[in-house]
Length: 91
Image (cartoon, rainbow, N blue to C red; front, top):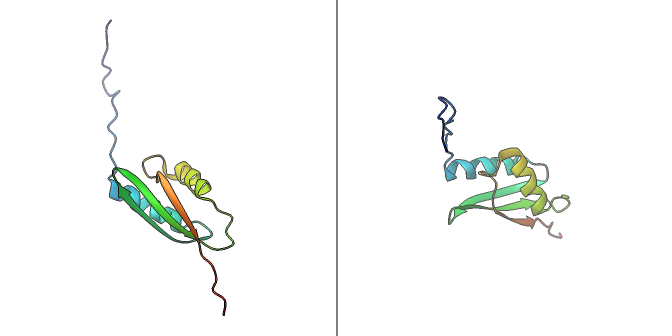
């Protein structure tokens, strides 16, 4: 078996740090309609998120995860998203 090295075929990828990925994901969540707040952090090599959405937003954690993955890619998508709906307090 022979292997041939083609010059220039190996592409260098710039690696994102976990901090870069968490900041990118948090900013993305905060720019989505219906999202009132977001926190993204790293735990044991995985990104995790807590996203606060308005009471009437038609968003699920799965919807947000899929859309984040499409927009930012696997490296910047949290592995788990906790979703919290805000509730208006009665006067």
